[in-house]
Amino acid sequence: MSETIFDAGRYTEQHLYASGAKSMSDTITAGAITLNGDGTVTVTVNAHGFAVDSMVYYQGTTAYNGLHKLTAVAANTQTFAVTNEIAETMGGTETCDIIVKPEVPFTLHEVRLNVGVAATTAENFTMQLDSGYGAAWDCILDTVPMAGETDIHRMPTRPMRFQAGDALLFDWTNTDAKTWSIEIVYGTRSYGHAGSDVKTVG
Image (cartoon, rainbow, N blue to C red; front, side, top):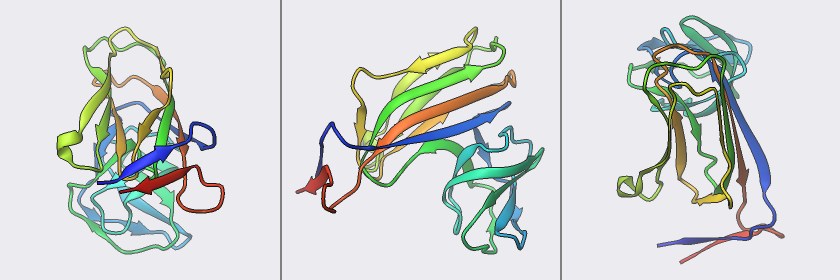
């Protein structure tokens, strides 16, 4: 068992931005991705609702797991920059979501969600912990009924602390297809170098 020790002082502030007009989570469509030859790839995600410049997290792929900033979108595709263009055929079970998973200990500071016109369908916006320690430690950290809401702001009295390997999943089904924008403010810390304010023991 390990224990990560935080110093409440230093951290690197990070901001994740995303926006769209449908669900905050989508399943990637089965089929080969397109290698564009210019340092970008295009992935088919049928009827997705994410807007350009959204930062979305890919899961379940072979070569493209992680956070990507969308440089172009169409009704059924997402394009983003990559270090290497690698051929891959998606199986239809992979996902793109709004996830904070920096792979180092991190703290959550604020969540800001704006909806252009309030939804009427009774659905919840949720923030869920996907624990790096195992599914038995997963839990819903926050739930907001979205019917009638246009501005959601969550700012813990003290930052919420998470281990390397933990992930925070933000989701809203958004059946009414309302336009939304989300900003997530979090802090990351690093291991083992001079001046580091985090260490893992045990």
